[in-house]
Picture 1 (tube, rainbow, N blue to C red):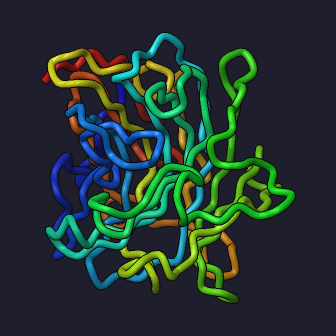
Picture 2 (cartoon, one colour):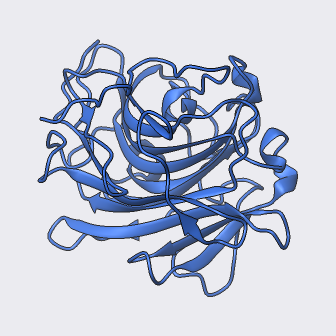
Length: 289
């Protein structure tokens, strides 16, 4: 399998900013209300993230994701692939502001083992703000959108592709989400008003792409992506770009200048080299520690 490139560390990047991998999703399930539940769990992740510092200014990001259906997950298991736009102060979890979109199989949230399009946000590291989809005041869907957060995605023969773009619009300053079946035909889904954020109100300082899983303590972690190690048969994230305030994507410097990789448990998951605006990620899971 592919390993991490030189300079792609499985620890914090150099410099003053040390953003938490996988956008520091809570280590407990998020209930249907959007708040975290009572059962402790373990997060695993395999992601690529911008190699930035606290003072960095980013306006948005985009990517095209392979989407899969993985059945037979238990209520204590979850898999996701996502793009996460972040603003966080160094080592201060409560300062974490995120806007996230992607696909997930999340039985505890949706009551089934089907693949769903989802959104998630917080303005205080998941302490008291934020929720999935539109289950609280936050994300605002628009009329005639191509999809609504929480909708089911039906991968044909177990696989499809979706493109997601999140950017801070220059006209209103809100964080807009666009969606499409390819990177040439995106339409607005809705937006996160800038007013619901504090640190993210003005700009992001980090963007992350990739996958993660959750399972209860001492139980085996589920597969990530499509369950294959990161090479040609594995799940991919393509068209990985930054986005400007007009919604136009532009290229990112490769490692180690522009991007860095983080993997929580390399016996179960990994990410490939980042090349030609894409990378592979995933693995069979099975981690119990």
